[in-house]
Image (cartoon, rainbow, N blue to C red; front, side, top):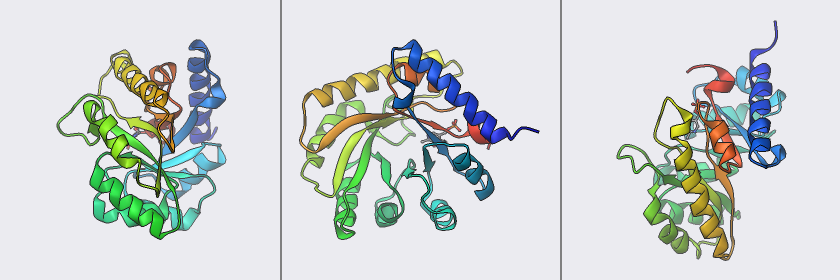
Length: 229
Ligand SMILES: *Cc1c(COP(=O)(O)O)cnc(C)c1O
């Protein structure tokens, strides 16, 4: 029997590469994150062995156990809603925090990063559909948040992350991905100091091909790799 996780990853890589080529991009410019929420160690190890680039988790507590047990063979990114009082654990555990969506969190992450002698790479999470029950900063607030974060020397802003509204049809998510890329491009043109603005983390199991066609550099896939939760 073929190993389903390895086969799933191979298929996602193929589809990612096809989407990249369709849109004139290089397949190697897109990194595949395996989202490990509620996935057991053995299956995470299979995903690492099959060559995913990044592991992502939403929960500090769960991730702490996983990282303790299986180490940092590849980078771990935090992708969940982060309470300010958990910032210190996030800084100790993760290689990138993709879900910075407010200034008080950024200030606390900065303080904790400097205390650890680190510069933490972060993404700004954008609530691109302005949905009431979703974390992320509204589109209209991104520029101001980025500007205010420029003085935080313990953080380096690498780009933007989003989770668009949920649709059955991935084509409906496409305009949201495009909007995020356009915002990223505008911010990149400003050449803000210590701000890279090259990473676009967007696209999940149901819509990663549209996200790649619109410029994603990290796709975050859970169910497509590990099966339904
Ligand atoms: C769960 C999750 C994903 C992965 O979603 P799937 O539909 O399982 O691929 C990606 N990003 C975030 C922020 C998530 O919480």
